[in-house]
Image 1: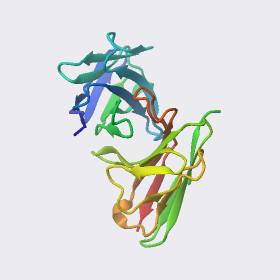
Image 2 (image 1 turned 135 degrees about the vertical axis):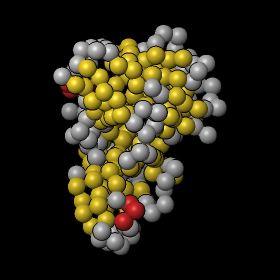
Image 3 (image 1 turned 180 degrees about the horizontal axis):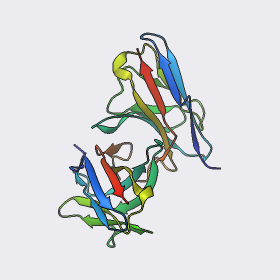
Image 4 (image 1 turned 60 degrees about the horizontal axis):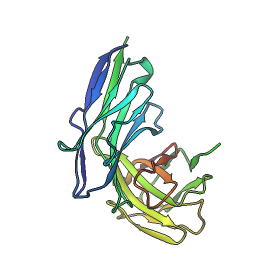
Length: 115
Length: 115
């Protein structure tokens, strides 16, 4: 069965510091995709970054990077130079290449950026 | 503007009164799906659709119905809502039904309260 685990219900970070949000996953698929989404207090879901299981390089999108360790089945999100606007809920998600009908989401991490 | 539109944003209803939450996307996406978000549980998939007239159950389909008569629309129907269906609902779409690297694009959510 597919499963996403986010073990940090809430985190604090000082403005301008970097922060890592943890995500581990469990899958029997050999090929899969990993996604991170941001949900600000207004409620919408915003796609941040994607990592394919066969991608050799870690994905980066501006201040977001994904620390992908396939052997450990982890896909941690790193936010560099945190900003107050980064305060939000963050969800890790997975989609299989063969079981691509379903997205699996973690329970989320609430990030608070302190000024 | 490319978007997924859900209506209504907020809905308060009583037990047993049938309701429909509409979802429409203007991106010609093949894949559409519905999720419910509950605290501590992340997002769980209710139903998904690979294309017109092709729908299937997600992980929590009980008490819900869907239809996909047109590519752009994917309404969620609660025939007899119950209080345990009080939740935040999201409709989402992605370009290809068969591509694991295709991210979900979300609507703004519908907050449903069943009394």
